[in-house]
Image: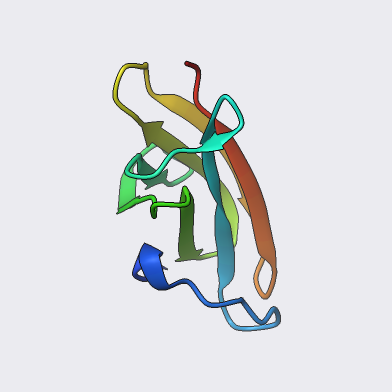
Length: 100
């Protein structure tokens, strides 16, 4: 189970809820990369959800606890895979670094 809110209106997260939160920013050369697509893949590599990073490079998913892969797609570069472990009631912060 996964959900993704509107990435342009992300509010602060209160930990302790029934879901795991995976959130972060997409950066290129230390600068936020808005418009990149971030896909959430489950432990078997199956597509679960996708969001477009906000203008400030932010993204967020609400997911089940477990191992996930974030596959980030940005113009001019190969996909970047980042592994993250999500825990129920906690927020996993991730910085995705996209090569120039």
